[in-house]
Amino acid sequence: MEPERPGPVPLTLAAEIAACRLCAARFAATATAHQPRPVVWFRPSARLLIAGQAPGARVHASGRPFTDASGDRLRDWCGLGEQAFYDQSRVAIVPMAFCFPGYDARGSDLPPPPLCAATWHARVMAGLPALRLRLLVGGAALRWHLGARDVTATVADWRSHAARGIFPLPHPSWRNTGWLKHNPWFAAELLPALRARVAEVMETNG
Image (cartoon, rainbow, N blue to C red; front, side):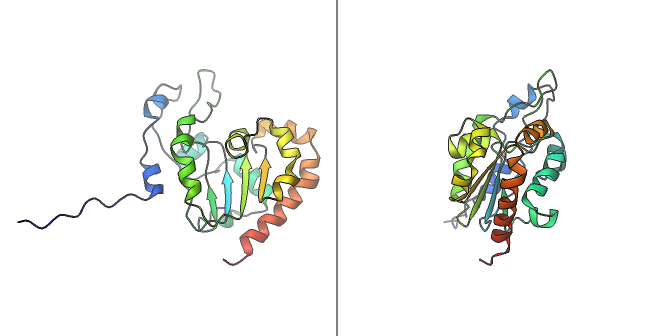
């Protein structure tokens, strides 16, 4: 009798997501007609979660999250340099869709496909037991994590969320520059508190 052969080694969750092609037909039908390229950036030891929306075209090309102007603004909001921001042992960057959704015929960003979050997000969150602070960036993340529909009202109520280790944030896109000008309390009140809390979480051992 031949010895029993070992079965295939199970993929880690990150590897499963990286291999996902569930939206291949959806992306092929967009104006960009691109292939899936999940951008996966988390480890179980992470203590800070950045829950964003979906990779843009530049991130799709680089394979690294927030390698664009939005990332520059978000790092400034958090008070983090690139080295700390991309330290996967401490920072998990988990968008509501891991792939670039593409553009429509007018060149506008398509929203994150709900299938991605439905398939992966709960499993990823269950695999991040060390989280101490969650930054929810943009409407898609606010809806999934908080059930919130009104971005401005939710961000304005940041103090009650911060008490639970959550900071709701608008998306750092240049499209929200007008929002930032119309809501000066964001820079004056929320950002100093955010930077202090991020620094505390990033610097604490364990």
